[in-house]
Length: 260
Length: 174
Image (tube, rainbow over all chains, first blue to last red; front, side, top):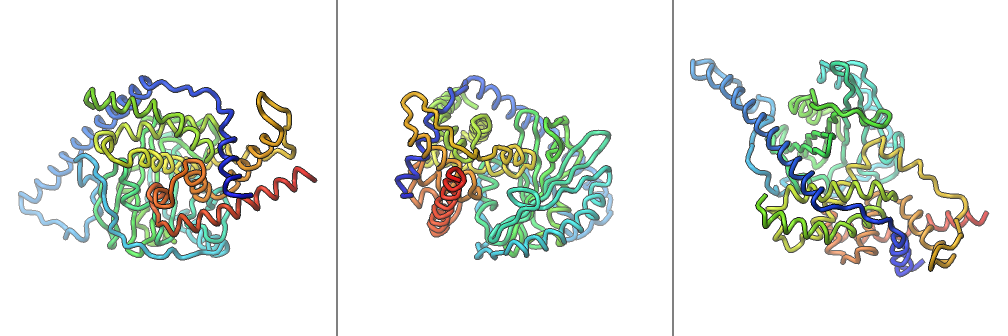
């Protein structure tokens, strides 16, 4: 099969495409609505930050000391300015090539740790359901695979939510601060020499909040929380809010026991 | 967004929606999901429009956003199980449609089914190189990797596609 055959095969594969159900007005209206909701959320965030800053600043004004900056947890609201493209600060390395067996063994270690770590961090949760680590599918690994991931479902106040843990080998080009921030992101500072970045995706009723820890050694830990149980049976039930904070996600993303 | 910006976004969306949906379909193998991916991609581009609209590589930027949107989608287990349920047929349907020869149907079925069996980034690199006709440098820019990686992924992807198609041919023939 030649390259020309591949070209022809791909062209033929879309030859009988169904009619495109696309209305630019509807798309723009949806996008406008989402941008508006996003701004409203940022407004709430700014108000929350103002209250938090006041809470911290007032004791300082009256003479109480604070912990050194280095000892403080990573801030979750370092900026409310418009997102910008951020150059990668992690120097690229040649990715370590894991075998499928190595990935399986490492995943088992991380799975054991997650069973302790997630309930400790998400204290409000119960009914934890730990999915199997894998790649393209649960329990599936292949030589040279550069990531592994696993879902964790849980209940808070009677509603199901989920966290998705993805760990990447060192030296991957994507995700990087540049690719993650290509659309919009929030800088959360640094921890252990690694950059922390968060993103929030809103699509219709679905919300996904993610914290990435771009570690000093080039590996990446990505923790996403969903406003529904993404590992549960479809159709998903979307909740209006996510009762897991960026600080909680950051704690998991910077957990030294997680990572490839 | 200002009115002129919104108009320019609208024009971009109308011009590129079909192309993005086709690329998405080749990657995911499902027209409905491809439409969702295209819409999600367009909304992300809308949010960034004021910054990216004058970018020379806007079209390739849209490909990058689509790629990321699809890869994110694939990481959701319930989506993955939806995709994996689309089993490869044991027999190719050779019933001719209008203007379709059986040979053409055969090739279409095999190349795309073979493509859907490859790892996601190999699939993406083949779509970008052989469907979108991007150069190695452009593909590297879209995928956020080096040109060397694009070359090696393309070579591996073609080998894997050939092997995958051979296996499918064997299954259909047996």
